[in-house]
Length: 458
Ligand code: HEM
Image (cartoon, rainbow, N blue to C red):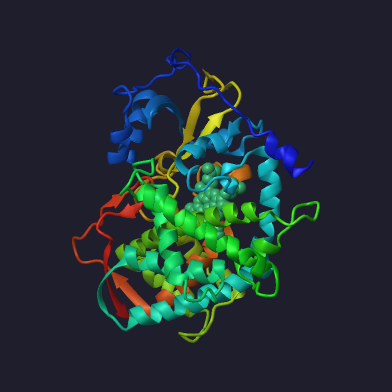
């Protein structure tokens, strides 16, 4: 199938009439605003109250539209695995991300999505990943060494945000960006912040307006660089990999495709890693026994404090991986995932018509008491092989599942373990007595006060 035929087949939909959904239990709240403010104020509480009142399928109204929320592992499997190709990711995510990240991988569907995902996958094979690891390792080691020289209180979230930004510049764009690096970083930060801004139109003075301007700058940068990266200025960074990537028929990705995929990839990686690395270290600060166990695992690698980490070293950190998973369970960086039904379907006895906006919710599933006893307790042993064996495979879905499962999953584990290795080997982290950080859980989990931790050299 040629790329043009595939692109032309993008699906259209008609939203169902209101009375086609009223058989589904729920409460749509006020006209127009619906339940939007309740969801924004307390997403976990809101969804748990609705789940308790209405069950695993309920109707609500957010962001100007009726939504059907489908809860639990079976719903995740139906929607994410999507064996029957019922659900469009394009028409789910477009409303949130379409203006700034049009045609990012997650915003493509079905055959077209499959072809692009295949082309992008080369950049995530083990050869390129090893090269990203050496960039990440260098950046992390240098930053941890700086933190080590400044013992005392530190605001974890902003420090982590700056670090992931600098690491993305090195591993995604190459160390050699030149004097434009600060300007590109700023444009990128504006674009990512706009992705989750409450005002969705680029009105003057809004974050969305800054985001649209940032996108213009980033697009211009990519456009000017593509011919250079395809020639002898290309390196091993992710951008250069995409500039050389081809479709099945051997054709290079188009300039516009590279721009759209790069913008999306950088966004997909940035806030998710910032959020998860912050919650991971936050949990270790709150659970010193686990911090000690992971430090022992790191020290057992036998590496000098400033020595680089290899793929093999990271393989020998299973407890660290389990602890990172537990942080992702407690605070999934993508707490909910939207889709649009392209055909009629039914779930738990409810008929749901084509065109309906539906959503699944990792944040809810990750706290279901019947799957995760004492769901708010940090316990990495939930992820031993034994403990996982009898669990539904869609009970833990921080990276989604099925065709759109996170393409950067191994990148994320690699960065988290590399970070843990340098951090724990050099720094001890704690929380002040009686301090309980307060988190905003949606659209991306983030500590409200930046998360104050105490650091000291090990
Ligand atoms: C802890 C970090 C991360 C988390 C929790 C995360 C989570 C997710 C989730 C839940 C999805 C699927 C959304 C859906 O189906 O609606 C997704 C998709 C994606 N993620 Fe990640 N992500 C992370 C890091 C990354 C990184 C580091 C990269 C790139 C280097 C990345 C690239 C992508 C891409 C390209 C997709 C779209 C895949 C597709 O549609 O085929 N992510 N991610």
